[in-house]
Image 1 (cartoon, rainbow, N blue to C red):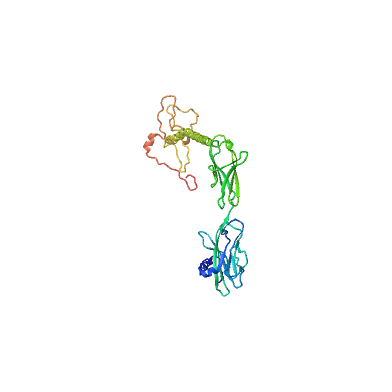
Image 2 (cartoon, rainbow, N blue to C red):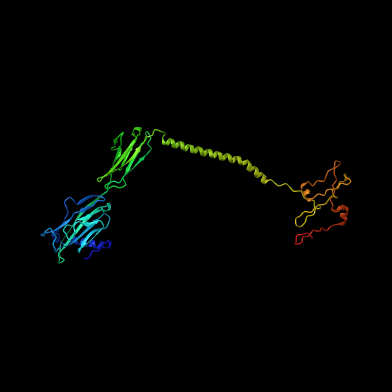
Length: 393
């Protein structure tokens, strides 16, 4: 029979273990497996090593192993909610085991004690030893099994201390202490150091949860408080300093801060509202200016000037037409010739004299009278043309 290590061999080992357990009672009576009385349950600290003692005897045989004996030894670990886990096996003279597991004595031997080194919390569980002995002809001489309980203990890890509440005179606070890891679960004890030493008990102290309730605080309760977490393997401590203040309560301070913030927000709102109201008349004036109608442009006299095709303005000569009927020009005086730009800037009214009201004068180009124009009929208008070079033709 060949031993198959690892997970694929688990079903085969389970079948073999159950088969050995169902051997006839006669074979069971010939071989007996022993464990020390009172050592069926072991508690060992994490990080140490332990020996699970076990040995077998054969009825009518000496204690020492015989040359014809062919023992088959297997150790299994049973844990709640997990499959059967093989820890060690000795089959056909071949030994295989998990890391940190070994036999105390080299095989073959009737002492089949198991040694576990570097214990971890996950090593806790029920360890079952199964022994089957055959002779040199392959005949079974008996089978037996025993179980030992192993519990790996963990000392308390350093706890963390916290202060819950506001340490003000008359208030209530809670001191909290908790260890993140401990097996079995740690118990807690609180005390205050000198100059005012004190040890606390229930109901102020909860030794399971690690909390200490302090009510109606006073300045005499200030000091350094020590929490001690302990179990079967050891203890660990932490501390917190309590300083009871007599100043303004936190609620009053918080209310003052909130009130100040609200006041600042209201002031900012009033400033913004004032700025908006100050800008309103200016915006209204701008709206009135934008909506105002532009001044009307006076019409140009149709016959007072000549405009070229390319948009340039020619000079207008109408000196003869603007002669006044009551005022005559002085000898040797020059008559001004108005341009189109001067007509646009000045009012289209006729010049006044200091005498009677002026009479309307017809402005006829070239000095031709209105009666002559009536006899001549329509006069063709010649519009100057522009060649490709941009000059007038």
